[in-house]
Amino acid sequence: MSRVRLWQFGLIAGAFLLLEILCRTQIINPFTMIPPTQMLVGLFEAAVNKPWFWPDVSYTLFNIAAAVAISIVGGFVIGLGLHAIPRLRCAIDPILTSYYAVPTFILYPLLIVFCGIGPLSLIVMGALFGIVAMVVATLAALDRIPRVMLKVAQVTRLDPMRATLLLKLPAAAPHLMSGLRLAVAYSIIGIIAGEFILSTAGIGRRVALSYNNFDNATMYGLLVLILGFAAGVNALLGAFEHALRRRWYHQS
Amino acid sequence: MSARARILDYALLAVGLLLAWAVLYRVAGPEALSPPLETFERVGSFLDSVSFWNHAEATGVAFAYGCVVALAGGMLVGFALGIHRFAGDVGEPILTSLYSIPKITLYPIILLIFGLGVSAKVAFGAIHGFFPVALFTIGAIKNTSPVLLKTVRVLRLKPVEAIRTVYLPAALPEIVTGLRIGFAATLLGTLIGELFASDRGIGFILARAMEAHKVTDIMALTLLLFAFAAGANALLMAVDHRIHRH
Image 1 (tube, rainbow over the protein chains, first blue to last red):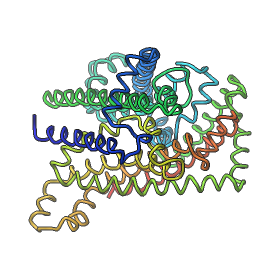
Image 2 (cartoon, rainbow over the protein chains, first blue to last red):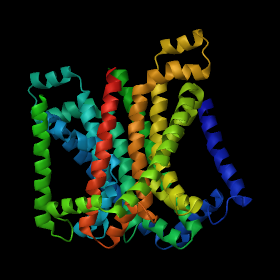
Image 3 (tube, each protein chain N blue to C red):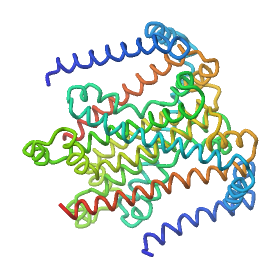
Image 4 (spheres, rainbow over the protein chains, first blue to last red):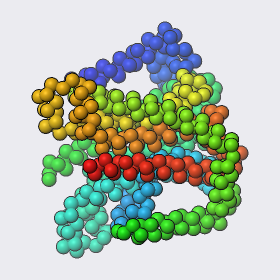
């Protein structure tokens, strides 16, 4: 293990240990936070004993997967379209740059009226959250495609479909990855937040319910699950991006 | 593109959005959307009323505190981790993964720690804004050209002097970008905080409108927030552009 990894591991372990000690000695009130080991116990017990656990987890995972798919494909297609029409892009640019400054899920109640309370509202919410990150990243990535490649497309007379699939997509891939990571992270946030606010099922709803019932063991257990999941997905995509970039720069 | 064509484009976009809104209203009905004219009237009556400005002030105060904490804290950590290479290598991935977690789920914890009130809103706003500022600052400082770093060593500058005369000016453009994103994130965090648990603020009246299903109120507040966020963003973008060009 490298020195950096060792330090990272030590820091995180140290933080957990400190939290454990502070909670065990009741310097931190047990109604506020429970020791990390008890959070894991709470998660384990929820997974084994609670009948809602697996259905709710799969509900949330399915919604996240659907939202991610919509935001990535939709974001890429919209990005391509905007890139092809510079004037429209220029006009729409202020919306894109200030999109994440506006709390999008104030639209959630309206969505519920539109799509009903259920998975569809949540998926649309998650997709609305993720799609703009992908659009912005796609535009940035397309901007970075070397001119010479576009000329190659013209010289070889590729039709637009082929030019996109064979040339633009691979050339933009390394830069698209950062958008992909953001789209995934935002979709997860959108889904969990939607569930947290108002829904009939899902992990986010369970967090809100156990908070209302003062069931700290379950609540912190579920939080650990969500945070671990988000961090894990992010780390995985980060490693993938790293590998992709390395291969890319190695070749060119 | 000439300035005139650009203004025409913006006008066309605005007209297009209004048309889409009107059509959507026809399709969805008053249950889901409010018509444009009525919404604008409601915006006007909000801006006229005293109670709205009281709520706006509550949000503004929490937002200002949150910004100070997020921007100052983020820059402090960013400078420390950016200048000290090894600490940066250790800390940056940890910050990145903390940045990517859905912070909304931390809200119950924040409430348990800070209780209901302004400090919870400030804390929630600050944890949203802190990470982007810190990460952008680290990135900016790490990209300082090696020649400048050598100059710092040759001149034996003290850390404070080095920051003031070399690191800060060299990294300023990216730091400003980070501040812009941090600003937006803090606003988002503050509003979300108010949405879930508070007794004052724009987020609070929004939550109340959501519960009572006052569609016109929701739309009018959304419009106001969007206008404010977009306006502030445009201002910071202008600063950003200016600094980047120099």
